[in-house]
Amino acid sequence: RVDKVDYKLLRELKKSGLYLVQYGFESGNQEILDAMHKNITLDVSRLAMEATKKAGVFSVGLFILGMPGETIESCCQTIEFAKELDCDIAKFNIATPYPGSQFFSDFKDKLPKNISTSRFTSWLDWGDGSDELIYCPEALSKQGLINLQRKAMFDFYVRPKIITRHLLKRTIPLHQLLIGGSLVVKKYLASKKMAR
Image: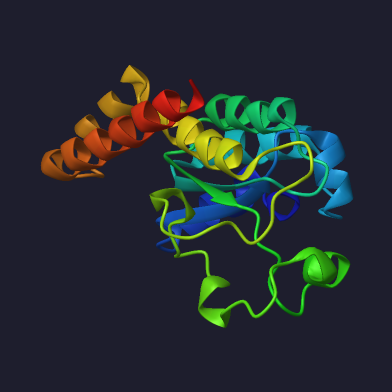
């Protein structure tokens, strides 16, 4: 949790062998964070990332798009916040109401009937077009939400700063960077074409 770290702790953990830390930043919109009961602020997230960079720890930021009450604007705020935080890696998941969660309880009557439990996994690629989303907030269309996820990946990763960082640190091999980059660009351009 971003509210449980500071530079001193991260520095000591790094000395002890910590290589990577993942933070559930979730959203770049404070109202959405409050509705999720995360009990964190955007400023606390900023401080955690500053401390992480200062300690020299590799960072992964986890973000969610499409929570209840989300709009195109709030999703775009999350994308911009991810870029501002500038983690080494960012993952943008589409909100999924997992069975047993409050999110699931609140929306189970609106979910598709007879849905396979295999679809309740963060590993399923909702953006590949082979399956429909389980949940989508009222202000967004399902395809619009998928397009926002693709935009997030494109906007975050197709920046000279990120590409150069991974090339210099060799955190991602060049051939994987090229393959991953081409897939991000391909999906982003496909979503732009669909939006027309």
